[in-house]
Image (cartoon, rainbow, N blue to C red; front, side):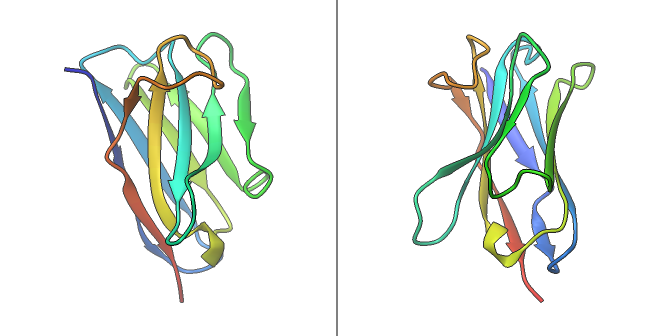
Length: 121
């Protein structure tokens, strides 16, 4: 059974940092595109970042560009989202998703359960 499990969320003060992990089991993540999404209370889900499966290109939404970094560790079969200079507006449940075709514009085949990130003083 293919699964994605996010971890690393929690409570952090404005300006702080967190690193989220997206660990795959039951399949090899290497050639999948992996996207990060978030959903805040009262808002629709939005794309945050993505790393392509067949090249090292990455993508970021305007709201997080320059603050967040997505990376991949193929040995650990894990994708990370490093979040720096966090703002209260970043508070949301964060999800990772994997696309079998390796495209950040794909439909995504597998989703994680989500991890809560709360930015508050």
